[in-house]
Image 1: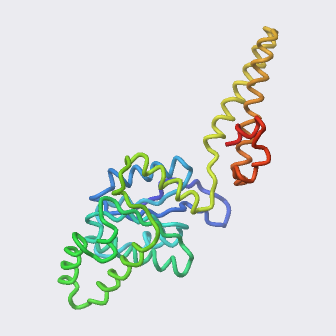
Image 2: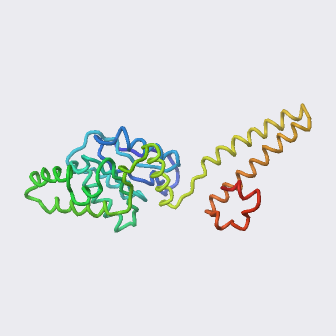
Image 3: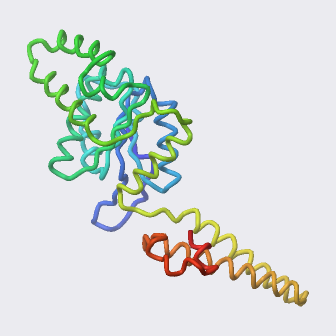
Length: 261
């Protein structure tokens, strides 16, 4: 069953609740349990809602639910891999994603996983082999095969990520996830919120404890916790406002500047 990675709760509002922001297109046999699952986890850590197809058995025709999921996404990540082009379903996803790019302004982010981007753009190597089979199977409707070729070339020409560059996969998925966050024009502050919440709880405990043991050292400890909470809240505001170091360069010589970034 295809599903969003984040379940939605029922609502009395008549306005439909957005269940995902990002659609992940991938070849299951290549990357479902490896790269794509790691990327999906990295996106979820940034509170980005994703749609990932969990249907292991696919029919000949792409489902309406999947087409709708593509339409509702703000951004589609296409994980091109060795066997991606062997799937008629994957190729139809690319066609639909490009349609949404044209009609809805959807953002496309190609990721080339263990495949040369040039091979994807020009259907060489394993992609050439895949299209030989497609041309044999769809000999009477070659316009469909040409549509897939054109879609691959266009999608692969978008600026994206080449995974053959020497770096660890864990670093790569985190960088891609941050790129997706920026392309969605969003700012992640979950890490700061977590710290603020914990320190505010600590401050409450300190206040209760120090009432019974009123010493100068305890008072300083509580004040230091409050000060740290204030610093983190300021840092959160700077991040939310997208203030850059250059914009705050007039504060460069102050101690507060160093704590904002």
